[in-house]
Image 1 (spheres, rainbow, N blue to C red):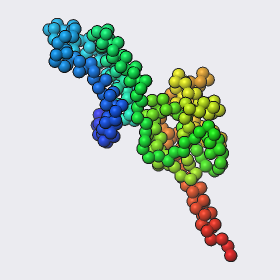
Image 2 (cartoon, rainbow, N blue to C red):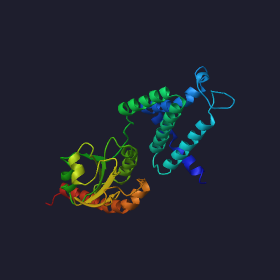
Image 3 (cartoon, rainbow, N blue to C red):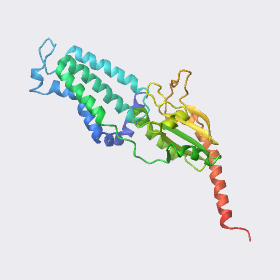
Image 4 (cartoon, helix red, strand yellow):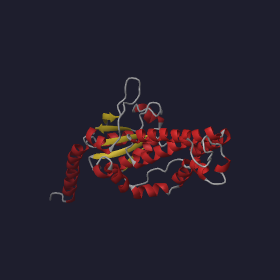
Length: 283
């Protein structure tokens, strides 16, 4: 059963995987991930490559190359144990495939290694993973609107994500946060986002570091009456985030979303009653 669960999860998300793989970023990443395999296995090219195999077959992996691939495969499996979305799984595979390619190309020929490394750097600087563009009930704040919105109605509870577009963790979390907003958004419980990579003053005021070393991105903060009630991840005395997994289950449990939603629906009903009364004023 432990083996069947991830298999069923993969099959369930398979249509989404196809959509992502058909995007230019993932198509280019796929070709770069299999570059060494293609060079080592393509007749006419592999014939001229060096090899440490005893049989002299330069069109097959030698024992050291197999060892490197097995070691990096183990790292990918360890990293994917903490991955919470399909995007993160695919991203980890692509990242460590490129690392493996760099090592293997440098070991084969330093010139090929330098060429591949240069291509990776150019790709990193010019291509970004596609941003989440699906449905959501999320209010996007700027440095001028966040305080006003949080303090506008003290009865409204806000859950705000502090993020940065350059952060892979934020990009992976986007679909999870959007799903939560679709399930729990109502008149008394609202979801917001603010890009602290763009609005530095917001980062300072709400004490969310945008530094990659702090590992505070993304940060979820619960506001009630305009005041912070709790946040995840928590931050230690050194300013580093305490490890916390941004799964949908963890967020629902830690932020008591089911309970908050039930209480917040009462505010929605109260507003509806007031609207009805205003439509039929007393004689």
